[in-house]
Image (cartoon, rainbow, N blue to C red; front, side):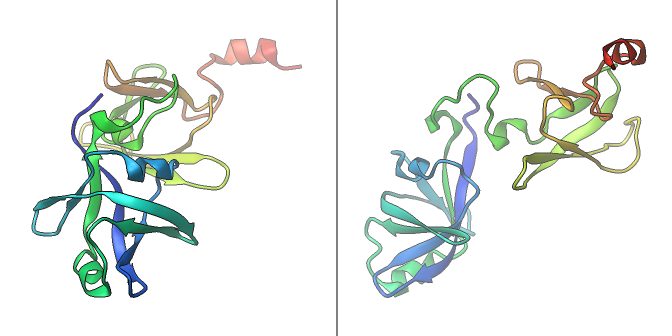
Length: 184
C-alpha cells in the first residue's frame, strides 16, 4: 500500500471548554481515528504525534478528545491542522474497495483505450460516489467527465497498472451488437 500521508480529517473548531475539537472528515470508519501513529500536520508543515482518546459523531463531523488537549485554548491552536497517518497504517480493505487516496490522480481510459483524463475528485452522494475526471493536455476529450461509481460505468480499477477503465456511456463496455442481442 502507498505510504504517503493520508488525511483522515481537519480540525475546524474547538468544541466546549474541555479541549475537544470538531473534525470535518469523510472517512467511513471513524475507528481509524484510534489507529496508532496518527499525527497532526499543521499549516506550517510541522507534524505532532497525536493520540485520540475517544470520538463521537455530530452532525457534519466528529468530536474528538485528544490526549493532552484539555482546554479550549489548546484546542483553538489546532484549528486548521489535519489528522494524518501513513497509508500503510490503514486497515486492508476487501477486494474491489479502495481508499480515495489510492485512486485520486490515476489516469482514466475508456474501454477502447482512449485516455479521458485523470481522476481529480471523488464526490460523495447519498446514492453513490461520483468520479470527476479532468482532461489533461493532449487527451482526447474536452471538459470534465462525471462518472457514477457503478459497475456499468467503472469497468476496472487496476492499482498495479495505475489506471481506471470506464465506459462513459454506462453500457458496460459492450459493443452495440452485443447490447442489441441482450435487449428484449
